[in-house]
Image 1 (cartoon, rainbow, N blue to C red):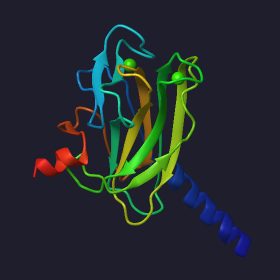
Image 2 (cartoon, rainbow, N blue to C red):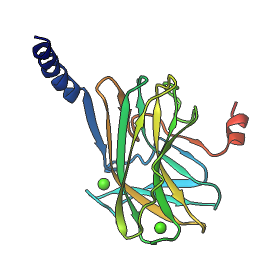
Image 3 (cartoon, rainbow, N blue to C red):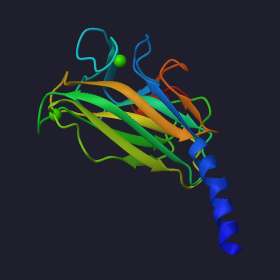
Length: 201
Ligand SMILES: [Ca+2]
Ligand SMILES: [Ca+2]
């Protein structure tokens, strides 16, 4: 009887779990490049090449050289402790074992409307783009410490001004109750430095 009950419970739970996720994708096919930027990154829409899918991608260039520029490409809100969020994108890097290279990373932003708010690092995948052209980077975050918002970053690690990477085909998998924002869903804001933030208030 007990095992029957257990089996019945499994049948009930598994389909709910399977249905409890949503998947959204973003391919930079419109006019909006990012939700925000941290550091010396310049984000524009690439319309020629390299493009992974469709006819456009995100071009992310470092100028002037300094720090690790971050392109804010996704913002997942309305999260709860224990939720998981997975994100992936393709990065174009044609410099194997040399700069520039890209990473997928994340930070918490629990503010409902301001994409420049920083509530701490959420870490990410330490693997770099491999430099053989388009490479796939992904990571899964588990929500902790009462955070409600996660920003997905495309990072560029460069050694020369004007080093450039391209990003395409962002995919986010999040719980059904979460809100997934992509470039264009809110007004983009820049947070170049903490000094710039302070002077703006
Ligand atoms: Ca595209
Ligand atoms: Ca590289």
